Amino acid sequence: MERTVEVTTGESVAFSYELAGLGSRFLAVFIDLVIQGAIATAALSLFLWIGYAVGGGRTAPLGSEFGKVGSAIAIGAMILAGFLIFFGYFILFEWAWNGRTPGKRLVGIRVVRDGGFPVDFSSSVIRNVVRVLEVGLGFYVLSTIAALISPQNRRLGDMAAGTIVVRDRAFAGGVPNVAPARSDPLVRDLGAAERELVQRYVERRSSLADAPRRALALEIAELVRPKLAASFNHLDDDALLVHVAASALSTSRP
Image 1 (tube, rainbow, N blue to C red):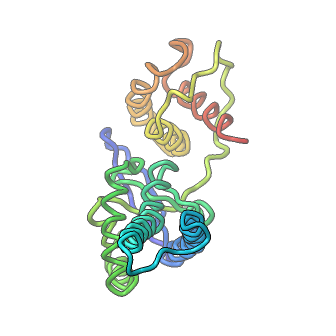
Image 2: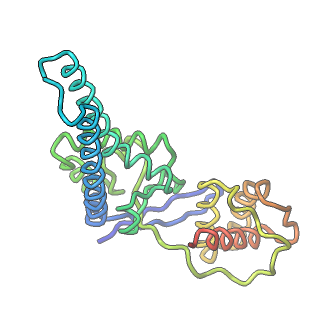
Image 3: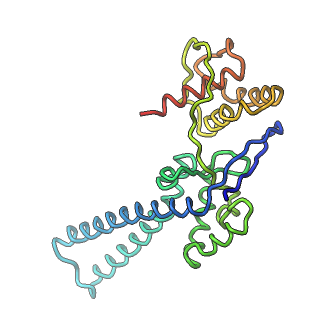
């Protein structure tokens, strides 16, 4: 049975998220490990080729000074590359893809911070540095136990970083017809946090009462309006956010 969690905005408006289950999370990790394995194999092949090319088709004698230094550099480079591939991979993708890795994206889950905010770089670093400990101590055994005990399915990294993993519901439908704006907003000027807030608002707006909806729309619109191409004064806050969400969605499609 899937668990849900409610987060509350500063205007006391609650949004509900469906937490990702252990099965989907481990499937995402498996997919990521396959991708990481492919990258590691390619990197190792590259290291071997470089070593062969630098050595003129042969390796230096291990007893020589050059051989010792070369071996130390090669080992250090391989250790660093391994760390970057198996842990930097998660940090990079979660930060750049708004809480998703390739595995999470295929499975349909994402990482968010407490309060439903998009994961930031520091949160991703913390949760994935702790991942090193989790992998080293029983290969996610501690993570599984922690997630089973936690009411929010948190592994140790999530507890340290203040994050949760939720199902990533596609933004679709529910957008009413709005009179065309005089010019399209420059959605490329909106950061990941603003886009996430706008899309989450539009997804949930129909479930909100009028007063909380207007208050929340005002709060988000105040963040968005300064980054648009025009003032859009002909649109109220709610209509503006619907328009921005539709524009952001259209520009994200190939």
